[in-house]
Every structure is written in C-alpha cells, then in structure tokens.
Image (cartoon, rainbow, N blue to C red; front, side):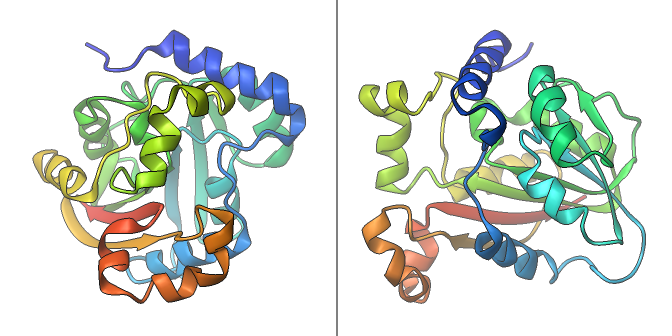
Length: 237
C-alpha cells in the first residue's frame, strides 16, 4: 500500500514546471546553504577519498545531487517520479548523472547498492514514511549513510506555509505535504533499523527580515534545537 497520492505529486510538479520552466527550483538552496550541509556531512563520510555510490531520492532539479557530484569521490544517481522534470530540466543541468524515473516507495535497485542516500525536502511529501525508509534500509550497504534534509514541522512559519489555504494555493503546496518534527522523525528512523549519527537545525532566515540574524539564531540553544526552518539528520545502517 503506497502512502502518497502519486497523481497529485506529478500534477503539482508539472504545474510548477509550467510556471517556472527551465528556472524550476525544487528548493531555493544556494551555495551558502549547501556548504552548511557538506560541513555537516563531512563528519560522517570522507569527501576526499574513496568511491562512494550515492542515490538522490526525489532528486527534482538536482540541487543536492548535482552539488555532490562535483566531488570526484561521489558517483551520484538521481531518481524522481516526475519523468518530464528529469527530461526537461535535470538532464540539462547534470548531463553526466544517470537519472531514473521511479517511485521511491519501490526503488528499482538491488539490496546493498549504495554507500550514501540523500534527499532534500522530500519525505514530508509522505504521511507515512515507513515504506520509503524500509526501502532506504534495503538498498543501503551495511554501514551506509542516509542524509536527510527536511522542512522542520516545529517551525511556525513552515506550518503556515504548508497549511494555510492561501499559501498552499500560491506556492503550489499539495495535500501530500506533511511537515514533521525531528523527534518524530528520529523515532521513524529507529523503527526502520537506522541508527542516528547526528542532527542539526539550520536555516533561520526563512523570513527575509530575519536573514541578517541567521548566524546569531543558530547559536541560541532554543532556536538551535527547535526553530530552524530545516533539519539535517544523518543516520546509518
């Protein structure tokens, strides 16, 4: 039993693609935010040595997978349910990365295939993430890592963005989207037999007026633990 309206997910993304065309952005993360992600990930995997097989779940416009692939030690594969997006945008942006049209609740890969699996703002598109996480566990190699970048459901602005009828209409937010908090997510990861290696809240600039204070908020304990716009969680098989 799948836990996502696949048809709606495709329709929403095609509507976004029609509106933004080749400027389609599955996430607005730029170089600064990606550097934060990589600084976090470096604590768990060697960027400079080895030959790491990487799967980018729900790869969208290849924001995350494309940046990882710039490092010679990462061999990235992307998978997304919206084939038209892969054809029109992702392939042009990352022509050397193999892309697969498919559903991440039923991954078309063998067991123990990947050293690292990543996703950027993807799992909150599922009300029940257990099927995806079990698939992640299946295709990860023993000792392999899952890097989860997710919208933080504890953040008030994130809640408004995803639940206000006006915001949902303007921002093309579908009913699949269901932001969650880090405590619930870590429980789900453990249930899928994945061990928590580390976590960090980032992105306190979710409102433009707060952008100058982003670094400061990241140092205040209550903000650092709860109110980031996004969370990073690294877990291991």
